[in-house]
Amino acid sequence: MFETALLILYVNDPAASARFYRNLLREEPVEQSPTFAMFRLSNWLRLGLWSRHTVEPPAQATGGGAELAILAEDVEAVHADCSARGVPIAQPPADLDFGRSFVANDPDGHRIRVYRPNAR
Image (tube, rainbow, N blue to C red):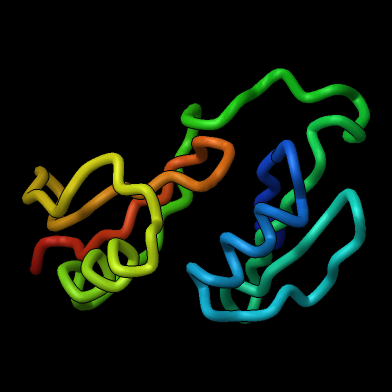
């Protein structure tokens, strides 16, 4: 049995991406070097930001091909906070089939979906 422990995004500038995620998550990275930064997202999941210029084998993917989804009780409050802090918003809050959500972009165009699922 496997357990997902690390999600890696390939970025152009790990230091700039670390600043963005530090601001977004309001957390310090648990690890940082010139080519990599890592944030704790939960007790078991980490977010890695790896320089696309040093990863081996070379990465083909670019931003926008996947989403980092973050569960939030108050989507509107998180959207207002992100907007006030200058986080680029790709989609304002909207009701979708699965619930309420908005989408932001990081400096490399990776999509960050903040959502609250519909009550079941």
